[in-house]
Length: 376
Image (cartoon, helix red, strand yellow):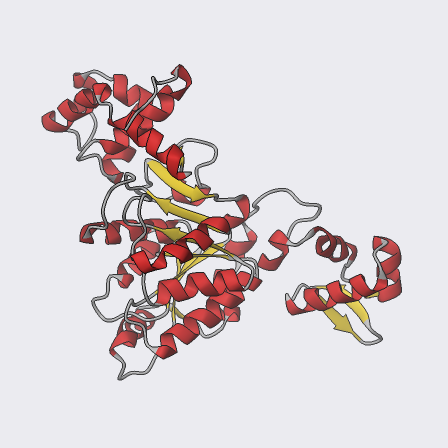
């Protein structure tokens, strides 16, 4: 690969890449180094003695960190990201997702194709078995579609089965999706989800902490699952066998103080045993999106992704088109007639009526006697 001479302004990013590429610098050691020195640049200029004072850094790793300062691999990685349309966001950057900063082992560097936007702080993970049953696929689609319509971003792992169904349903409902990869973003796994991955990137983001060309090794999936839960307010497990890797996402969620939901299933179905066990252990059973909203409670209310004319009071109010937002902001607890709303918004009558119907469907407005409306 032909690479250009590094621009001085690229130095901070190159140091972040160098740190992420060092073998042995996993999430915990990376966090320890960044917490100790304050930045990747400071890590990559630290003395051997200073490096050895960090928990988890021994002689061999200190040597690797020092040798990485002269490695050309970081510039090659940066060039590959540019060619593939991948953005790099190091921990500490203002664009780094705030929810991930809160977990015990945040990625030191995120690779993102697409974009993570402020409203993605209102996200729910929907995960489950790769060998999903028709029941599981149906429930995953129903929940993810409802979440997408309600304004939630659906997070999953792009795997076969429940994950793929969740992504497709959220996008089909007009919502956003985030797919977290175990491998690097230079390739899609499973390969048959190439088109789905492109759709997610167009209407959300593909995310990984792995270098671009890293293959999907078995051990990386469990490590990846902490990012799925970390980006989310809660995790819905739709189907999972008793020893399913999916259950690791629920464990990560508990460690990160996220809500855990599980879809109950037939007692004689192997793919539902993991979910039924989670419910026995205290996970909240979920049948509809109302169960999710009830379970989140003030968690969803505490998220304030971006500024708006009035504070959004429900998930669906986070990303309304301008005219829907205008009508919603005109409504209050006092019933208002259609004529009043037309006069206040100066929108055509047919458009106001259409918007009111949409706001009712989104449970943001309620019709009262006399064809008057209030804000929910």
